[in-house]
Amino acid sequence: AAAAAAAAAAINAKLGGAHARSGAVAANEDGNDSDHSEMVCECELDINDYPQHARWKVTHRRSVADVEEFTSCVITTKGLFYPPGRNPPAGERKLYLLIEGPSELAVLSARREIKRKLDEAALASTKAGAGKYAKYSIVS
Image (cartoon, rainbow, N blue to C red):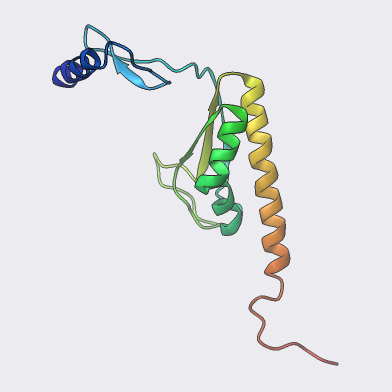
């Protein structure tokens, strides 16, 4: 950690001392790590029980980036997927999104937008999958 801090100081000196810390974890003079982000609010949104297409839709890079840019929140996918009827082992969690933001309003706005995308994708996949695997149809 000290070597990395020394290397960062050397690069900083070459660049004229100007550098930006945009919410990243940086080392103090005494070597302790400190979080310089302004993230104060967070919430979780369970996505494990949604259809695969809906889960993909809200965890896709483009979709996440749009919501993050619009709300100034950070969205992190956490946990593991477990099929319906199976429970995660002790110490594990089902798939969920962690939404962190600078204010409660921003976090709720991001959660609302993600939930809307989840519901739309789930509805679309339900409609599209109605006769998807049927090889024959019954004719009277």
